[in-house]
Length: 260
Image (cartoon, rainbow, N blue to C red):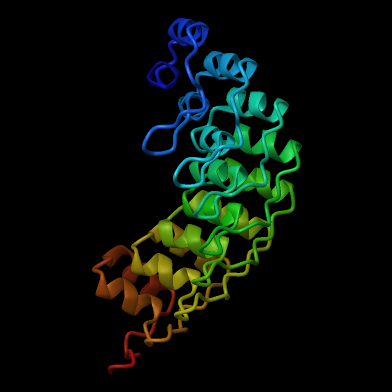
């Protein structure tokens, strides 16, 4: 296991010749082939596969070797595992499929490979997050672009009501927001708390995102379920540049929240 994890192929070969058991997992459920896949040691993975390694065994978190390789962006390992029958429909305990994991971490080449092999981008994790939501949240514009080219649905919100454009706005990823707007994202859709993308961006001080949303017709008069307007949210958190921008665009500073 240790030799597999660290990519020492000659040691792995020697151990196999001396009867090493490659089915044994550590306390985290990592088998040698899982460990080698996780760290991207393709030659070790290949050797273990030639010696009958089982790639369906999951770790304690329900992660398969192909999920682990996808999460870490090891495209050649993912390719090898696919050639050996890896199941890319299997999700871990959090509901992360390989394409979700690769999207979350921004590994565009892995996402592309998985899509070419039939990956389903409509499957959500346990929080209701789709791959395009995850990529948007983390600012992976090239992955978002690729998913859009493969007809990802950007109208779907997660369990909290966060759509991709909301997630990108909340985190300040202006290039992702721009791309989503170019693809018809609806910036009037609020989350479960009644917060719209412009409110979220204002609250977190993302002035360039706020500016972009304003240019695309964002309504700065709408308050969330607590009555917080964008200018209130920006003021509450001390984002002077955002407050200034909103005032220049006609924000009403006389509007109070639900507590007056």
